Length: 597
Image (cartoon, rainbow, N blue to C red):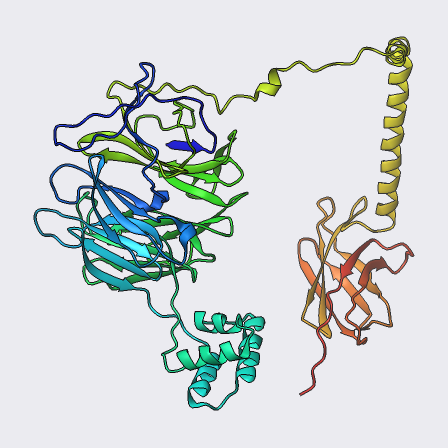
C-alpha cells in the first residue's frame, strides 16, 4: 500500500526536455537516484490538474495493449459557478482528448457493458445526480438516479402557488415550519425559496418556478464497479453507487436497471467492492459518521459495523484485511468482522492512499518517496506498457509519474511497529533525598515489627469477616439455611405487570444427612402497608419432603398511585423458635398503572 502524508521534501530535481520516438513532447524528468527503487518518468508541476483519487483511472480504452490515464479534472474551482470540469485522456505523457462535463465529478470507473470483441471498456463518470457513459471517448448514455419522495404538504404548497391560492408569506411560513420540524427533507427549490428575504424577489422566484414540475433527486457521493457473472478482468460489470440520501445502488451496465438497493445508516464517502454479483459479493462503505459498514448479497441492511476514532480519508482491502486511513493521522488494520489488528500514528496528516499489490503484505514501512509538493491524489497500476507505475497529482496541479524498477526489492523494516524514540531517552531521575534515605533505613531496621503488624491486621480482618458471616447465618439472611441435620433452599419469583402481582416462593429440603421430612414451618412476609397489600400474608407449610420442590403463592396488590416500588421480605420460621431459619429479600418492580375500560 502506498501512503502519502501531507509533508514536503527538500529534494530538487534537475529537469530536462527531449522528444520521444512518436514525435510527442516528452515531459520533464528528474535525474534518477541509484539507491531509489523508482525511476522518474515524468514530472510536470505546471500541468494544472485538480482532482482526487476516485476521479483517476488507468484503462486500455482502445484495446491496443497500451493503458491510458483518465482524469476527471475539476479545473479552477475558485471560478465557481463557471465550471471548467473536463474529462481528460492521456496517451503516454501527452493529452489525447478531453470532454466537457456539466457538473463536478466525484468518481470515474472503467467498466465493460457488452460482450463484443475486441473488448473495449466504457468510462462511467459520476457527476451530480447522474452517471455519464462514454464509449470510444464519445457520449453514449446518461443514467439518472431515481427521484426521491416529496412530502405531500410541500406538493400542496407549490400546487396552490401554481393556482394562485396562497400568498408569499403564508407559503414561506408553511415551508419554514416543515423545515424546522425535521421530519422530511425539502426539495432544493424550497430551500432556495426560504433563503430569499426580499418579498419582490421571492414573488419573482415563485412566478418563475411554479409551472415547473417539482422534483427531488439525490447526489452521487462515490462509485465502484462489481463483476456481474465472472471473476475475469474483462467480464461484464455492474456499477455500485453511493448517494447522499444514504442509499447504495447496484446498477446493471447493459440495460441500466437497478439490481439491488441497500440502506446505509449514513452517507457513504468511500466504497470498496469484491466478489461477483451473481455468486457472492461484499461491499464496504466508509461513511461520514465515522463507521464502516459491511454489506453482503441478499441483505439490504449492513451485516457488521466498524467504529473508527476519526473520519476515514481512504480505505483499501488486502485479502481479508481492511486498511483505513483517518483524519487524525492514524492508520488502522481491521478484519471484516471488526477486530482491529494494529494501529499506527503517522507523523503527518494523510492526504492520499492507494494500493500497491507488490509483494509486501504486512504493516511494515518499506519505502519513502520524496516529492516536492504535497500529493492530493495517486493511482498505481499499468500505464502504457509499464506494469508498475505510480501516478501522482500534487497540490498545485502537478503531474508526477514514477516507474517501479523491475529489480526493486522492498525490505520489511519494522519502523512503525517499534517503540517511539522518546522511549530511548533516559529519564532524569531526581537525587535521593534525606527523607527517602531515612525511610529506607527505618524499613530495614524495623522489618520484623512491620511484618508482625501486617499479619495482625490481616488476622483481625478475617475475624471480623467471620463474625459478620455468623450473624447473617443466625439471622437467616442467607438463601440456604443449614443446621446440623437440615438444609433448606429458598427461591422467590414475581409474575405480572401490576398493579396485581403473583408472588411464588419455592422451598426445597436439600439435606444430605437426614432423609426425614421437615415439619411445623410457616411463611411470613414484611412489607410497607402504604404501598402493598398481600393476600395471604401468612402461609402454613405442613411438610417438606427431601428432594421435592414446593411452591407457595401469595398475591401482591400495589395500592399506591405513585410510580414507586419497594422490597418485600420473606421469612421461613419454626413454630417453636423466634429466629427465622431462612429469609429472602424481593425487589418488586414498578407497577403498571391500572387502566379502566
